[in-house]
Length: 379
Image (cartoon, rainbow, N blue to C red; front, top):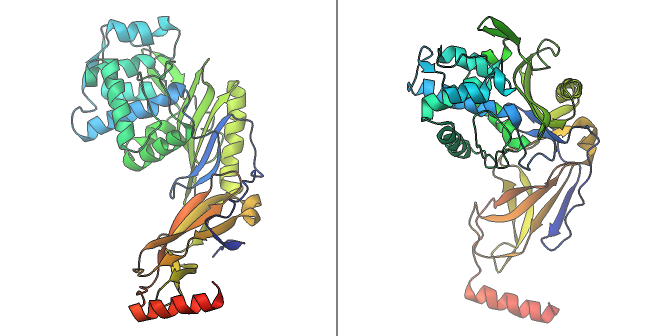
């Protein structure tokens, strides 16, 4: 089992550890590399700041549809009519990504899903939004509310398509969490993301994901690009028992997106690893106890501590145990210290440490004797 290379015991007033840059770098402005099973973030770059997601928005749109299917609000055979609004704003004449739906025609939900995921059809998104919520605005409000419910705190959606809007945004980290949620909760529909093409209205369009067919094990998820967002991708791949998720955004061209995506996904498997730093219940150190029947009490982790780390940064990991002297009585399980873990390129992690045993307070006579002894010693 891997253990931290340095364990420094200090009081809470000590200076925090100096953040180190990771040895891994990339040109993409916004990046997340995540382990699917644990959710551990291997690498991130400007990943917590909300950004314009472009058509990567459609992962959330698809999630709303899949949840409606699961709730039996609709079926795959449910048909929705193509409004003039959907045709005008999302059709071929709009100059946007389109499924090429005909105005006032009808389409089955199953076909609309493929139009959204494979063809990135804005018209298909708007048709589904109107069909499920009455209007795209109402649907976008539901998208935002649902995103917050599943923990995507940075998400604000103003439409179903990712069309530029100053308030339409989500962080790269939350997009990675959304991908994890999609794969976990909709396994029956997730394979659609791996389909290479879809034909509608006699027009065949290929899947735009630059990982499919190029990176072994790649099977999702969604590209996006606008003049505001640049070129981005939420991608996932599985090799053996390991699955990785990457998010990139802000690149300058399709080719640059393809090059960066393939490099990052390769690195995700070859250059990063999930390390088990501590098991639940591992004893980390001791905390001084004032006026207790014992002078100190051991503290332990109350959870398994894992970290996704660039292999070249492993030796740079450090930790600090921070605490103040506590006054008795102390109950087993009391939070009386913290373990601060520093990993290059990441924000410090703070792990609460709990008292292992109970420490009872001294009797009145014992306290008086302690005060006397401290005075004699000049303490």
